[in-house]
Amino acid sequence: MKRSLITLALTLSVAAPALADQALATSKNCMACHAVEKKLVGPSFKDVANRYANQSDAKAKLASKIVKGGSGVWGPVPMPANNQVSEADAQKLAAWVLSLK
Image 1 (cartoon, rainbow, N blue to C red):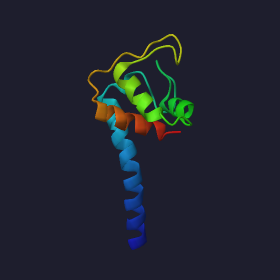
Image 2: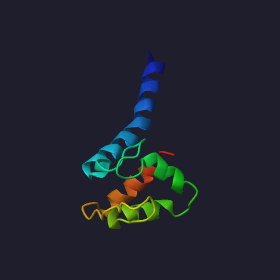
Image 3: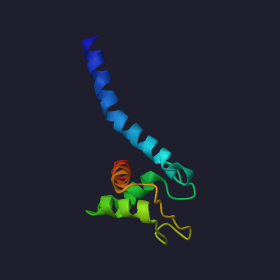
C-alpha cells in the first residue's frame, strides 16, 4: 500500500506541471491554433519542440515569438502577437513546449 502511494505521488508530481502548462496554453488561447500532437492552423507543439531541440537559445527565442508573433518559419500563415501573455508566462510556455520533444 505504501509503495502504491509513493508511486502515485511521483506520477502526479511529474504529470501535474505538464497539465498545468497545458492549462496555461489553453487560458492564453494557444490551443485555438496549436495542438500538442497534430497540426491545426499552426504546427503541433511537438513539432516545434523537435525543430528547436538542439538550439541553446530555443527557450528565449520561443518566448519572444509567443509574445511578439512571427512569420515565415512554418509557412505562409503568420502567428499573431500575443500581448496578453506576460514574459514570465511566455517563458513557462516555451519551457513546456520544449519539454514535449
